[in-house]
Image: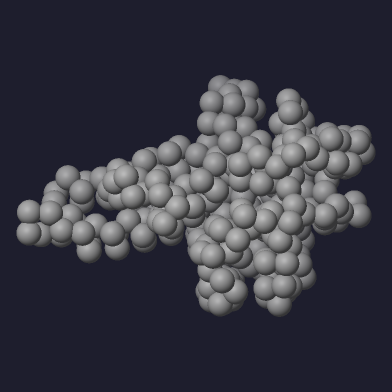
Length: 305
């Protein structure tokens, strides 16, 4: 196996980064928070121009890698749009996207959007979203569902993995912002980056971010090669991504200080809009419990089993 995206996928991701920046960059999420009904008009045109909805993430490995790169770029700018959910849509239902939900209080970041959505539970039950409640933080709303079938087992892994790529993009940006911040801020006549304690914290955070990147590529490969344990790999990625996000954002907030919680700071927006990705459909403890239940005493298969 090759633990890297193709050159075409990486170039597509870079092109998406430039396109999102040209469309408004960090201002997009701020505008969408002020007026959630503008989410489609803010992000939809640029995604259409990129050919996002023409990507085949289900049957084409190149399309799958391009979809992952696009999700990562969307996370980098905290794009106020459920890109991963749109790219994970099932091929046998007439819907615009797929949301993996918990059995209890199914929710999704769909407030302000008129798209047709399907949901799938970790047990494979699929439903259509017929309506949703009022918007909460991060555009999250509780969903009212109508039953479709129990044939969603093959949908779950992709629906879990692509949002982790979005979260990875947020971690990329958080680290980049923090490294820039500690390089500019001075204390006792030298930049904060010169202090050994700061270097240790950044190293710990970067190790976590890099680990998620490797696991994300492995889980993507597992899906692309139709491995029977793809869902186990997806759950392992999700658990690790949530753990890494807690460490990375904690370090980044500590090194930014109080300003990192202010709306004037990009880190504040990234941290805020990472919350739905970290909490839905399951938080850390529930994800760990689900993975433990699935793999039991056998453990994850891995490369060399």
